[in-house]
Length: 613
Image (cartoon, rainbow, N blue to C red; front, side, top):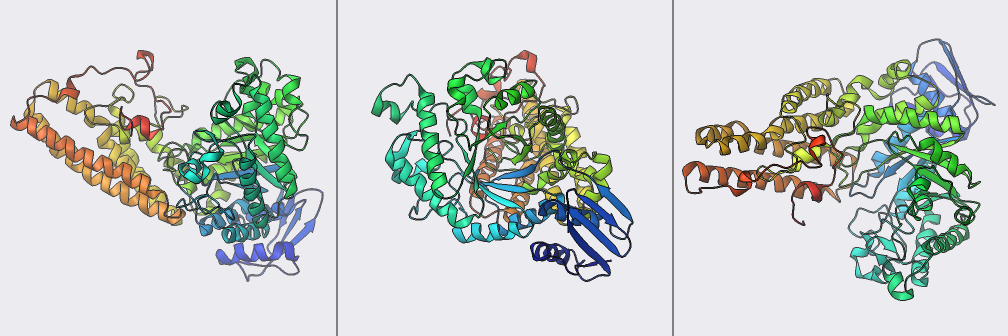
């Protein structure tokens, strides 16, 4: 049963045709009618679906209802708690989504009712006249960004550039060309005209690509500003906030020059630059001398990705700036090869409720990819959907069927993608044990006192569930295959270091020989299978750039496994008398109170070795 669009206006028709054609629903007997209105409402009968909308994205949300409930008589009338519910996708942590993958997600977000999408690009976009900007990083070209901006507009979605204009630019400073504008590590040199010449080129290029007058200039986590080359040039400054805000003013002027009249920025520096934790947690107000330095046209974006008891106090503190305020939550897909959708939703419900209570009218759902972008972008699809549904006042139970009919997989199964990080003894705690157990060593392992061996058996069961779920997952089968391969690997890897240590200390060479056959040799196959699934997943969603990091990590573990087998066999055969690492005392990673509790460690460099990589 399909739809025909009748006299639908041009601003709606092309986008609707794209969505319906993709789903094989264009050219049926049910008429779609759209009316501009002062409220959002969908009324459907067997022959007609009438969608009243206040803004274009609401029409496409209504179209999502029509598709999911096609053939039924129904009425929906609802409103979002936010004037702008947007999504930000990280394209800077090695993984840069392909244009087609972004377009696919735009179509999905349109059916959910998202109003804006931000593309977070540190140096992963083309800048005219700067060939080293994003060189070999899979940067988005001017042509690609133009095409995406045009495509998003077909669904009424405002595509917003999200760039860095002060910090998080360490990859840029890899190139000698940019040494002259580096303050230190990842921070641009403020107050230097060469910095503003570069920023001018960045904004000029972005103006070619985007039609919006909004831009996210970021400037987050830059409390080290003026402590590097700036210090060398000017000497110590008593008021680094002045340096920061003078830079903000220059950035704002350049943005305005190119028609970006409404910049937004992460607000953390204003709360933490004075190194007073009571200001950072909202217990003390931000001083007036800080508040007055924020340009009136700037939107402050408060980010907090967990259930902090300080959220409401900090939001109230933001309101004292008398500036536009946005709140940013997140999909926990960063720092680990598996997502945390269930915990993400627990946090987001709390944060959305806090925003509603305080009166914050803009919400941004972020999807960061820190430390290698190891988790699939579409593994967070269920959180994209359920979070905006909660903003519309809908429960998970009430909208689960609509999710499955729109996207071809059940909410219940999508939550199973979390399994590799799930700890049944601490179900509400964000853990990245799938990563620190994946990459930790066999003989020298910091995490032996973090994860119970029993978790290995759990992972074996999870792998079977994921394999079964893949059979009914449609186009998302690849997500389940990757997570199943990860759980299969972890079902052996989690306990092998403990087993190895016990057998060695007991002098049980026969048991060690059996362990090589039962655990170490199968682990080699598991690492290869997981690497193959990761490659297939990456190439389906991303440009190839950046996957070499995952190849290096997993390839290193394959070599490390070979090395462990060789040394164990030498010990069994008596050609090696001792394995010194196995004789060292196992210490707590944090302290004994944290033994067998999950932690958030998601940095490969800290997990793989005690040495600098």
